[in-house]
Length: 156
Image (cartoon, rainbow, N blue to C red):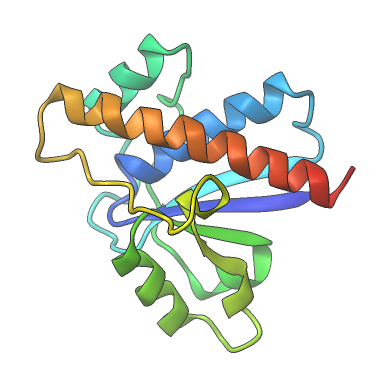
């Protein structure tokens, strides 16, 4: 079982959206028994809370339900438990590399790197308008498809 973790700042916008979209794509590909997902925030501000209502609504408009997800904070154990830890932006990536041991650093990657190089950051839609959530969803759908293809290629 491949374990994939999506990481952003507070775990209420980008990372739960990425988890939900990826989980949806994994299920559609018939791989729910082979790939597990989770999402976390680097900060603990929203622990136990559902995703931002705007994230829930934007995902729902695309047929993805993320209302069951609840925020949690990244732990040191996550670096051992997960095979792939995907950072939504450069700041997350740097922070995660600082927290990871030398042996864990290879698991820390940028979310968009499977889709394009150089990997652009997924912008935080929290302070933007509703179009920001739609733009982020476009990026997340693209990045999730690319990671799914990569994981399928690793484990045919």
